[in-house]
Every structure is written in C-alpha cells, then in structure tokens.
Image 1 (cartoon, rainbow, N blue to C red):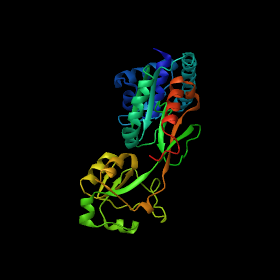
Image 2: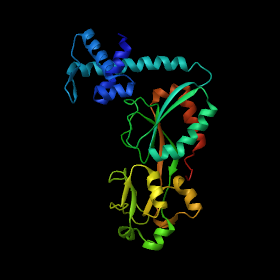
Image 3: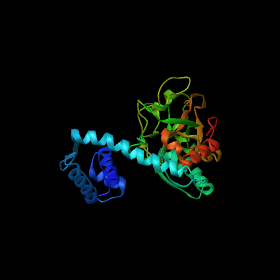
Image 4: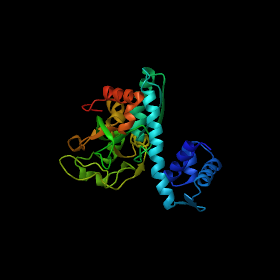
Length: 297
C-alpha cells in the first residue's frame, strides 16, 4: 500500500463525509477507496472511521490521524512545488472554481486565451454557485462575487467590479407597463437568480430596499433568466456582461437606471503556499492584466 495515497484517500473521505463522494473526487471506485481505508486501519491497527449504510463517523483516533495526515500531504505538495518552481516555463495543471454565469460567460474565453499563451498548462474549470473550500476540494484558486467573509488564510486579489442591469423585452413592457420605481416591481413578473437570499442580495441604490423576494421564474443559471427575458416572460436583473449585446441590439430595454444596485467586487482567491507554483503565478498575473478593478463589466 502506498502510504501517501492512503493518507490522501482518508483525508478525502473525511472532507467529503463519505466513501462514494471521495471516490468520485479522486476518480477511484468505491471498492478501491474501501480497500485503501481498510489497509490503512490494518497498518495502524486502529479504527479510524465507523461506517454505516448511510454515513460515516470519524473516531477520536481518526481525527488525530486526519490532522497529521493533512500536514504530511501539504509537506509532500510543498516539496513538489519547490521542484516545479525551478522550471523556467509554467507547466502542469490548475484547478479553478468560479460561479456559473461569471465562469461560462466571462472566465471561459479568458481561460482559452491563457491556454494559448501557456500551452503546457492544463486547466480544470469547475463552475458552481456554492462557496468552495479550496483546501478540501483541491482547488488552486477560486473567483468569488461580493464582500469577502470567513476567508481567513486566503490571499484575495480584486480583479473587477460586477455591475448589474435591470431590464425586460420591449414586448413585455408594451403589455405590462414600464416600472418607474422599485416598488412597481412588486406588480411585475420577476426572473430571479436562485443564489439571491437575505445573506446575499442586491440593494437598490437611492432606496435601500432589497430586490423583491417574489418571483415568476427562479434559476441558478443566468442564461436561463436571459432567455426568459428575451422571450418576454418578465423583468430580470443580471450582470451587464451577460446582457450588453442584447441591450445594444434593442432586444432588451434597461430599466430603473437610477436605482441599479451598486456593483459587487469580484476577487481571485488562493492559498498563500500555492502561489509558489509558476502556473498559478502566471494565471493570477494574466487575470489582473485582463480584468482590472476599475473594469465596468
């Protein structure tokens, strides 16, 4: 049994709270993950995980081993990073996490440009609207929208401002009327993003009220809301970079410009020790070069 691999599997099982989730994250079979855990427990002659049909429970000895295993795995990672730093040209793989709309509409084209500049770097781009734990999920860096909270130990670089626009199709406005104040939205069909909640919401400028909670269509994908707005289903508020071509073509009409919420910052986050990697240094530099904090996207 490879002791380093066994540690990696055990840490993944604890982080993902289950063998199946760890197997998926490590691209291993459930059976192989179980074999690694069984071999590890046999080697240390201690039960590290108590398993039931539905869940796992880490034993006291397991938690002690988990802390030590994380330190050991980090030391191994640091050793490889120091060797990689000797290479003149950045190479290797980068795992990047980003919110769905920002990732697909804005980041994806930039990633393609980055890979053209650095052909020896491989990119794994994961799009999700949940807040990732960089260490637990093995991400090199992540993009996050909004004020930073509980990001202790991470380095944050502001790369842009996230501007929103309120809009609807001309056909919808002709049928339902044009709102002149945020209060008017209570009488309209709203197309809202599923991630908006009391903890993360958009406040109207010159008003202080949050975007109304009632909705006609809710989705976690900005493209779904864009298509619904274009079809005349209702009023939406989405990032400017997603809708600017539709607005320019007259397919959508901007509404309530004086009440449009203030932009949120977008940060690129990474662990301090990961910045030793030339490939991550190259990516951070490229993003800062391509998207500046003063960008009005």
